[in-house]
Length: 74
Image (cartoon, rainbow, N blue to C red; front, side, top):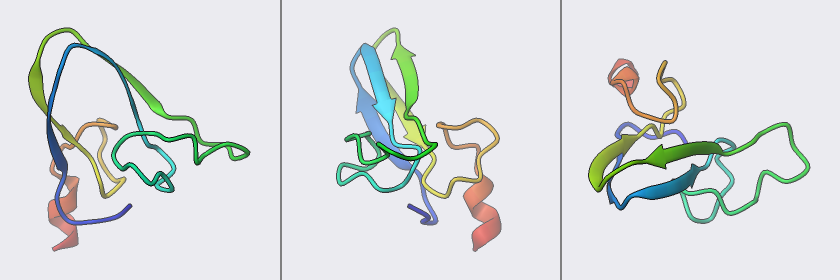
């Protein structure tokens, strides 16, 4: 899951489930690969169409959203 840039996605309004375990085959979305672990997906309500930056390094203080923490990895 760890990489040095976020997943930037234009999302439609609705409920989104973003992967928290890093095992999904559909990153950044949850595909249920966490089953049997202590991980649960990040549930996010998107109220209107917008572009979001989803953290991929796992170090953001605003998970599941990127806060630029990946810059310390460079």
